Image (tube, rainbow, N blue to C red; front, side):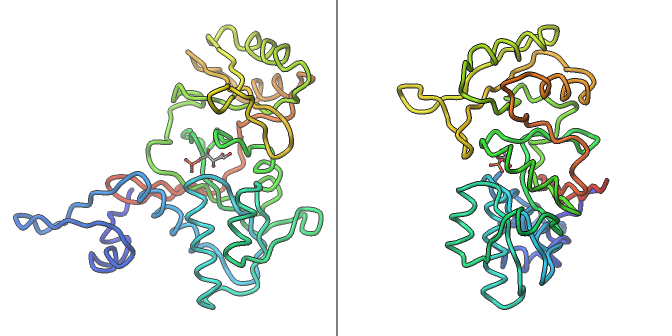
Length: 269
Ligand SMILES: O=C(CO)[C@H](O)[C@H](O)COP(=O)(O)O
């Protein structure tokens, strides 16, 4: 059940202190809350940071939701409320953000086991399987988050889907640049029955290929129908030479925090 915002923050006043817009219609004793999508992301992120304890080795996610969590960790370190944190960033962008906030950083070579990772997601299914990587960082995210004892996912409610691929938006696959058209075609053929269309991710007016932090390309898969058994789909993609990894994060999330219009819901595995 969702915890409504004023209750979630302790009171309407403390919700406002945290920068959350709360309206109390004079005709009603129960206040309503109007929140932007970014405010919802921030609420989920702040809730996740409550799981962080001093001395932890932390996976730092990538994207607009994870950014709020990293900012909050930096703030708590600055205030002395958290101490001895070691962060392992999941992208160059998050690395830069963490450095700017003074968060001490390390890597998986030095810290192969992490206490906790916090990251956003593009889709969350009812079994807490995820699609990630629309921000292009899926490979490092999967490496870091796969090495964590706990993986807390933070989303606003628009990310909830009945099945992965169900949003109609991209399911990213990281591939090597060599003969990318060949690999993209093989990926599309693999999911022909689901009406799959594979598109190279590009950016800018000239449509340059988007290049990941690892020097690879991303092919986005769009499905018209459910792709069925996710483990079978995952294995089939990973068997293709030329594929590095895909954005399905199966059975990895231990907790998902969902911020919605009516409040925050925490789902545990
Ligand atoms: O997987 C990711 C980046 O590779 C992001 O976590 C995902 O795209 C969600 O992003 P946002 O929080 O901006 O909605």
